[in-house]
Image 1 (cartoon, rainbow over the protein chains, first blue to last red):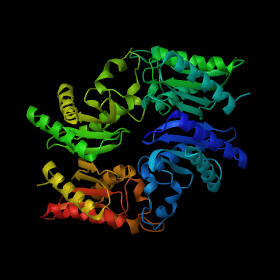
Image 2 (cartoon, each protein chain N blue to C red):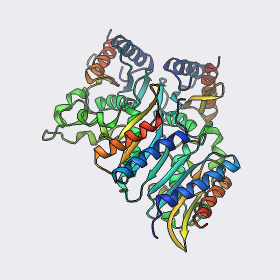
Image 3 (spheres, each protein chain N blue to C red):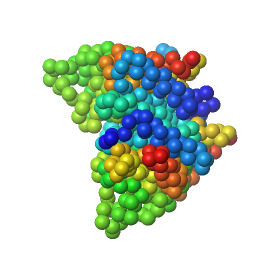
Image 4 (cartoon, rainbow over the protein chains, first blue to last red):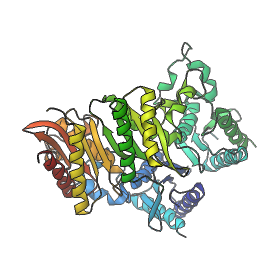
Length: 134
Length: 134
Length: 134
Length: 134
């Protein structure tokens, strides 16, 4: 398995959606493949429209950086090593909510979640990741 | 009802996916709301990556033009009235596969389908529309 | 093997470069991975600068469409089925010179060649492909 | 000599690649000519995809600013003289890893390196530069 299938992506999205319902925060949830190309997306009723783009970019950024987007935040602050990073590669998102999806240590895709607080976004993304390996 | 819900969008995507499976052509299928903003998307295994963007643009174009994208094709040919239309609004798609989703004559969203022949794309989009009114 | 390695990409570029020298036409030669991301690139002395972007886009277009770019030309003409296709996915190139790189039927990347006539571009790209399977 | 040849660019890339191997950090390495146009590029196996764009922009920024990118970092901080500079010219990169390539004081091109820490990027770029003048 190297690129995520739609079936697996759907399981990830469903688990993330269930978590979002549990915490009462409608979300935009995107899953991309290992090349950063969209596989599945849902916008829950009431989730803000800006987060459509943000969720997809978070997932794509996780692929491009091979890291969760939350790891980028300290690195891009004024005075920090990668200040300005977010303007490269057509625009990356550098706050939490994007996580690589790995199976046996191999990146098969990424999930991006947006519309709540960053903590909420991260917890929903992690619920999606958990479904991948359950 | 003015904007499509995720539940309804999912029914539309599922019906379109079933049709795509029936004709043996993996597809990219997008549903947008009445403002042209993405609500649901799936890329079936094996569907070409170029059609991610195309399917979403077809749905969005249907909202912007309030018409199926197939209706635009004759209008944008060299010498025709709207030659060059596809370069406006950030890029529209002017071949078939995008259809407004209407309930009782009111547009609630649109579906865009891409990855097969245009005839296949249109038939899968119509299967999605049919689910809305069943 | 699912994504092309730098070592393999270099072999492909070297074979293409040799062919370009043989026909006396300096070329821009790009190899991308199976997600359309650049792996290796060379601009031979005297090759036009416009073809830097064109060669990279040809390779990327081959990945996105899962086809040689030469196959797209008839489909995007005025009146043809996919008229306007080249404006999607951030800009695709729809003339010959881009070819998917396949090993045992699996796409591992793509090559894009530009700076000569289309026939020359295609023959240089094919020389690159031949190296992959030799 | 005013513009770097492919042969010289390849020597620079090879020296940089050797240094990257020595420090055990796979890198994206780009060489541009004195107009900022790409001449040669390699992505070593395992180097992150985000750095494709970053390495090329670092090289291009070095040409546009006629300076190493590391020199820009203090100038673009909030409150500093060139705050916002990175948003001009289509997007510049203002952290270290881009260095002009000079021969006898004349700029013939630039190298951009990305995927490691900034210190690693700079040391690999300097190894490329050293090859030019050896």
